[in-house]
Image 1 (cartoon, rainbow, N blue to C red):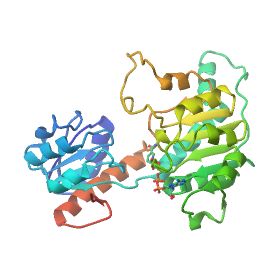
Image 2: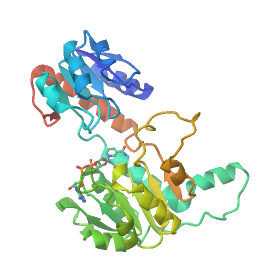
Image 3: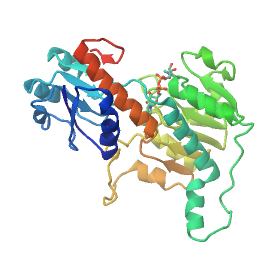
Image 4: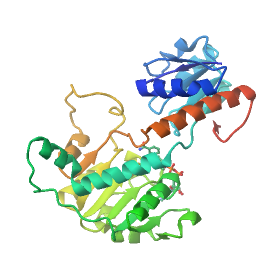
Length: 330
Ligand code: NAD
């Protein structure tokens, strides 16, 4: 089977090249350009394409893939909101994905953000480089003995709960569906209780109609003064305008964001030569107690290896006609 990769970064190529020998019979080629209706014809002569979260796999692209007889779209990510599944079904193209790779990768990044804003690592790094060995502005607080509030206790939330418990924190959680395996050390509470009791709040629920702008002026008002908020889930969970208002009102000790509402044009792009106008991201970055990273929670060697293995196994399963839970249906 011949697979053409789109939106390929060097690290994608490295992890797939490292893994491919375990899956004989697969031939992989890589393109840096994104998948779109314009670039889909390049897949002529390939059986499958491999795409990512930022690829355009809308109706026109899928139809263009059908024209060059592509039979399979391999998403090397969990999300598939950028794929027109109805059109894929009509065109007889299968879609397979990687539902989970390394929850610990994202949870460890969430804790890294929490620790960074708590102990001002971003400031300390720069100060010492400037021969400024003073401690002004660097005081944090112990996580030990404090309360961590986890919103969403699926795979990543559960990993974050375990990390917080390891720090000696009291762990409380809110989820619409409670995770029985965590109850030995996690107490489920209402959202209101979680907001008012937590010293650290970490978001791990998916973005849906019911969770859109879950963190807004009202919910921020219910939080403890001096709380740390971390979002590694999806930008739309937090209403940025209200977050900025809360930061200005000195509500937060710190805020760590791996995802934010405006991230789409930024994710994985080097825009250092540009002036970003009308940017709420720039406004967020102007606060010294805010740390933003660019959707890198998943970005560990283990996670990339897991993504490569599952994606190539999905290709083999397609060839063998094996249905697994990774098959995405319209
Ligand atoms: P998961 O499906 O295992 O868990 C999600 C949990 O959220 C479930 O327990 C679910 O019951 C709960 N939930 C649903 N609606 C809720 C609500 N209204 N209130 C509270 N909880 C609710 O998902 P996961 O693998 O743990 O991933 C969590 C999120 O992390 C994903 O949705 C994704 O947006 C994000 N993610 C980020 C990165 C990154 O690189 N930053 C990587 C992977 C995933």
